[in-house]
Length: 399
Image (cartoon, rainbow, N blue to C red):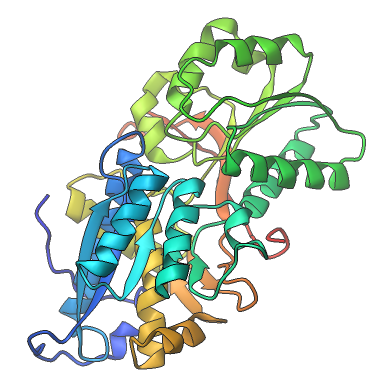
C-alpha cells in the first residue's frame, strides 16, 4: 500500500497542532517500535492497527514533527506469538534503537512485551491486549501503559447486556488463557452483583489454537442455558459460528460476545454467515460518529484504503500511538521519565472521544461500542452491523 503524507485537521492531534513546520536535522529523530502481527492468525488485526500508527506518524511529520524532531517508525512482525514478540521487542530496542514500544494483540503477547519493557526500561503502550493480569499489582511497573479497554471493562459490559436480556441460566465459552480467565472473573463477579438470581450453569474452555468447537457447542446446548457469554474473539469467531449454525445454536440461546466480533471487518468477512441477533462489541464502527474528529478520521481512512466502508482496527493503532506522541509533546522531551510523568493523568481527544490515562495503574478509560447484529438497510453495505450502537463507558467498570 502506498503511503501519503496527510495534513493535520481538527483536534485529532491536539498537541502536535501547535508545533511549527521546520526542516528536520539529520539524525534528529524520535523512534517508535511497533509490534503488530502481519502474518499468522492475527494478521488482519495487526496490519490494520499498524496502518493506524503509520497514519499518525505521517500526520505529525507533515505538521513539523514533535518538538522539532522527526518521528520514525520501525516495525517487527510479532506473529501473535509471545516468544516471537519477546525476541522482536528486544531486536527493536537493540538494533533499531527505538525510544518507545507500541502494539500487541493477544494478552499473552502484551504480557511478554511488557516484561521486555520492564527489563529494558522502555515505555510500552499496549494497543489491544486487555488482560488485567498485565497491570495487576504483581506485574505492574512504571513503563507499561494500556490504551485498550481492559477485561474488567469488557466482561462487566457484557454482564450489563446479559442482565438487560434477562439471562438467568448462563453458559460461558471462553478461551483457556489469560484473556479468557480475566473475562470470566469480571463477568461472573458483575452478573452476580447486578443480577443476583442469575446462575452460571456450564463453562467451556477451548484451548488456545482450537479449530474444532463441536464438543463445546453440544455441551452448551445440552446444559439448558438461556444465554451464553462468549470470549471466542474476532479472529476465531467465523469458524466457531459456521460450526454452530447447523445445530441451530444461535436460535436457541441469547448470545453476548466479547472480542470485537461486531467489528465491520468480521461482518464483511462472514457475510450471510454472521448470525443475526447476537450482541457483540467493536472498538469503532465507521457508520457511527461520536464526534467530528471521528468523521475526519474515517474520511482519511477511506482515502488511504480506497474504500467507503472502513475497518475498525486502524483507530486502535492510531490512538495507542497518540498517547505517546501527545505525552512527548507535553513533556517537551522524549526522555523516558519525563514522558511517563506526562502520560500519568493525561487527557487526550481521540477520534472516538475524550480519554484519560489513569496515573494509578496506567490504564486508559477506554470503553467500547456494543450492539445487536442486524442486517443493514444500506445497499452499499449489505452486511450485519451493530444496531443500535451504544458506547458503554469504562469509568465505573475498570476496577
